[in-house]
Amino acid sequence: MNKVLLGILLGAVLGAIDGATAWFTPAVRAGIAGIIVGSTVKGIIAGVAIGFFARKVHSLLLGILFGLAVGFVLAFLIAQLQHGYYLQIILPGSLVGVIVGYATQRYGAGPTTATAATR
Amino acid sequence: MRFLSDKTLERLRDTPDIPSLEGTRYVLLNRVARGGMGVVYAAQDERLRRRVALKVLDAPERNGELARRLIREAQVLASLEHPGIVPVHDVGTLQDGRVFYTMKFVEGQRLDKHIQALPSVADRLRLFLRVCDAIAFAHARGVVHRDIKPANIMIGPFGEVLVLDWGLAKVLRQLTGPNDRADREPTRPKDPVAPANGDDTAEHLAATEHSATTGHGTVMGTPGYMSPEQARGENHGVDERSDIFSLGAVLRFLVTELRSESSEPGIPLDKSLAAVCAKSLALDSADRYATVTQLAADLSRYLDGLPVSAREETFLDRAARFYRRHNVAILLIAAYLLMRVVLFVISRR
Picture 1: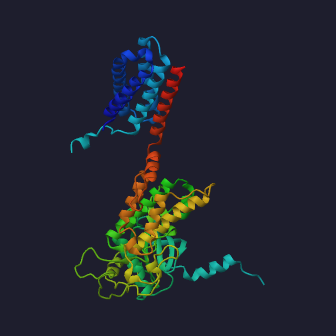
Picture 2: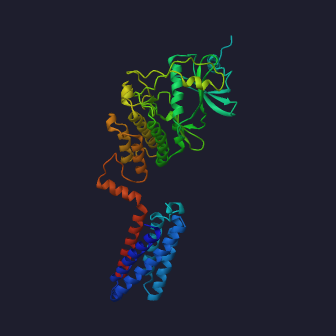
Picture 3: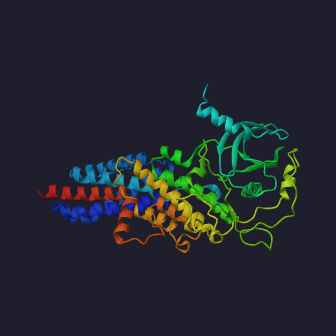
């Protein structure tokens, strides 16, 4: 599995879980479906960005930091749209970015070389 | 009356043994080591302008057993062209009748000295795997070393690993020749060994009679590293698995010596590594790894955090190994779950 695909899958799964945990907040329970979908899409976008970064840059530390930054920025935008629940959105979102950043650097196949591709 | 110092006495004792390289293209530099069969000197090859190691018999023995053994050692080395096996350059006879051969001069450290600068088990195992490469190659060519030990493994200045001292090597089979018998080289017509006279010396020696096989009952090897069958003198039962025993002893030395140096001597040896050592050191050769390649493969799996064939894992072992391989990912997920719990508790208040 390549790094981008790994990022997408992991981002989607963690994003969905993130969204699902909103069920424990009664005030937003009514819109849980939209929250899950939105969180999943956020996770996919983060996963794509982090996955492509991992293809280009082979550094565990930089991968984690980039994941943290992407996760934070996307979560912050969502929190701004929600006008609230900043801690509940940004903290998990940032941590999801860190996890995806680590996983794409550590696991996932890098791009094949031209020689290998022509065999 | 003046007394001579021990050092002076030793020098005087060695002086008559210093070989004269007149008639050869070599110039003697200094003595490097003394072994059971002969002495190794550093010499300068005047024609190719490079330093070589020159191994020469202690005393003239033109057509004797020791001369045949030395020539056979050179022939065995010449048949093993591998980056991990010291290459032989030349073979000949000095004017005093002593047989010699020259090989690559290895500058570096013996394995037992070199590993003092390698505190990591993984680094020592990677070094050991390169020794396995050289031995596996020799086995593929039908040659068993029979004297593998840390003192016979040199590490060069650029990290190259070389296996030395093939004087006890046993040839199990020739790769060519349909009538070869086990552990014998094909006999060749007797030919007197000509004095050193330059380029055609090697041609004369190519037709030299091979040495006699090791007789049953003769113990050949180093205590602590030789296999039980070698220690019992069962030389006809010695095969590749005897070298695997010796490799197991070297492996055990590499990992246990690290433990004894560690500031925490109570650290137990990893179970998988201990199992690999134990399988290599099995008293019955049938219980050991069948080939060096299998031993090397198990160690590679160990280095990759995979299960080894020498040990059946319990569920707990598999879980521990999984954790060791993925500890960061597991800790990150645990941190995420913990954070979720904390946020849940906060939101409840």
